[in-house]
Length: 153
Image 1 (tube, rainbow, N blue to C red):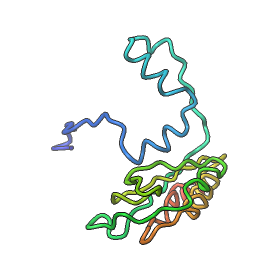
Image 2: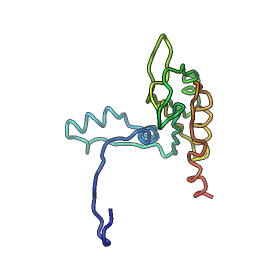
Image 3: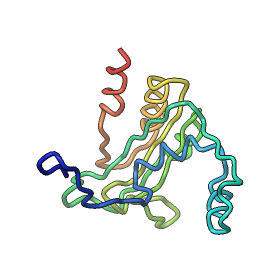
């Protein structure tokens, strides 16, 4: 907050948020467990943390009605097919397992993240992977990463 030209910190949130963590960690080359262990053993300075330079794009698939009252219990298909696509990873958020099926169990159901040599490739892969997934009433935005592409020209 800025009051009379003086900035003040109201809150500092240092946790990994969802879904923004998914594209960040998709670019992490170093094993996250090795980093966490080094932190707990107070030897983080000894770890070489490496990042992939390729961009990542994350598309959140939500249930019908989200962010208000949303549907639950719809059978989800296509997750395995989406995960097999180049550079794509499907992260569960609001899912459950019922009668041998993955079902929707929350408002934000899945995060489909993909990497690529450039933003356009990552975006294309993420949308292609999201297109493999189906459940009744699913919804996702169609403009993710568009502003980044416009900035690139």
